[in-house]
Length: 288
Image 1 (cartoon, rainbow, N blue to C red):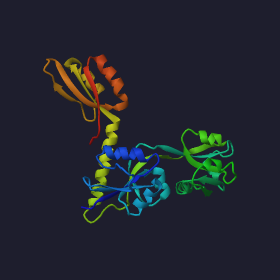
Image 2 (cartoon, rainbow, N blue to C red):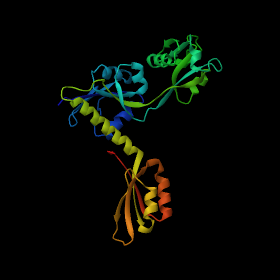
Image 3 (tube, rainbow, N blue to C red):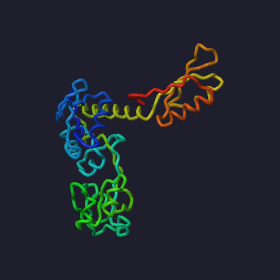
Image 4 (cartoon, helix red, strand yellow):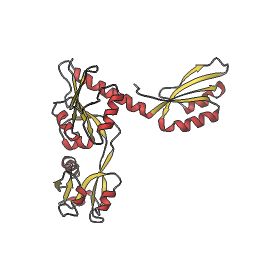
């Protein structure tokens, strides 16, 4: 069996949550001395800790089989690596910005200079919209480029917009991209016996199981059979609730999944219809 090779971010906002997600999925990624490579013998996986911006290149070239990086970095690299699972953290939004009132739509960028750290991503977006502009590549602090006179607009990550406003800029047009951490794989994961494709799918399934588990909690409660229908209507679960008779005549025990953010409200509603002994338990992983 071929050892699966996975790239993991070694720093930045992607690093810690990626390590936590992989650990929750049953993989060994702890580095005692900041090693650049770790063998997870039990899962037959070798992890490589790389710069987030380089991961799409290694995976797209087929040097590594899979990896975790940002969707923005994946699209900017344009190496052919494929996104297989959004991971829901390190979220960001890419926007255009310029001096207030000077530019109001993407079409206004025609013939203009646009500063960005993501020329592949921004260039592809402009091409799809039929806009020809000159891209000015910068490694950071692109918001100062307009003040310094080397660009007419910028394309960058926007969180609160404070740094843009401090530089005298305002966003315009639709978002270029909404990014987040993603699991990616090389374009052709089929080897001789298909073991790499199978192993990558196993990783995807495990990570998805953890992500789904984080969205739900298990709720258990007892209720009189007279209010069972109303209580189960509040907790329909994925397929249906599990209902078991209790030793106490006329009562049942119910177990079901509910969305984590709805759990406090569901507990209130269950109490009001007559349910008692209501317990909520967090989940670690799942296969749903």
